[in-house]
Amino acid sequence: IMNGLQGHVIVCGYGRIGEKAVAELSDHAHEVVIIESDLELVKTLRKKGLRVLAGDATQDESLIDAGLKRAKSLITTLPDDAQNLYVVLAAREKRSDLLIISRASQPNAVSKLRVAGAQNVIMPDQVGGAHMASLVAIPDVVEFMDHIRIQGADSVNLEEISMGQLPKNLRLHTLGEMNARNRIGVNVIGLKRASGDLVINPPSDTVLDESVKLFVLGTADQIRRLNEFL
Image (cartoon, rainbow, N blue to C red; front, side):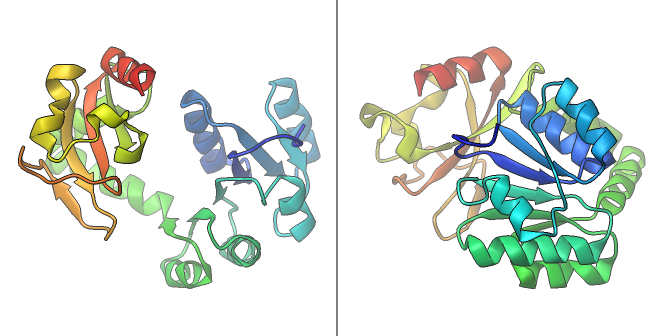
């Protein structure tokens, strides 16, 4: 079931964090391969139609069998930081260009996971605690942000678009010339340059080139039409 997959996401571990990650990825039409060591859970997930490899994600063979050489990214959500560290090291050794995202349980593991090769390290408990505090401090802002689903099926969506994806007639010199709002209805709320610099609410005279990535906000229907347009 892994043969022929290209550009998929490998998710290591199907606990509560892995389950959330797989659900979101599936909602956004990403192909996912799960590596799970619990054989009973593997059987259950396969009955649900999920691609699951029975194995230990800390073993190199499991990563290879999951299509590591053809994957676009890897998410490791194992409960033990040492296990996640090994997965990150093994994956980075084989794929210098792979996007790797790791879970961390302890704060002192974050820097180690980054040094090992994870571009992003998430501490779920910390994120959850910060979100709960924000519901007290800035409830309306949080409600608004929760309303925005990243490429999801809700009424408002956030999407990222590389200028290189656009048809040649839209690869124009400035944001104003592109006039995204009038053409499709979406709003450009930010952009990222090749240098990594982020620009929030860029002005219409912002100079664009093929290395720029745009962040656009729109309704589900507008985002759907945008994807069809691309």
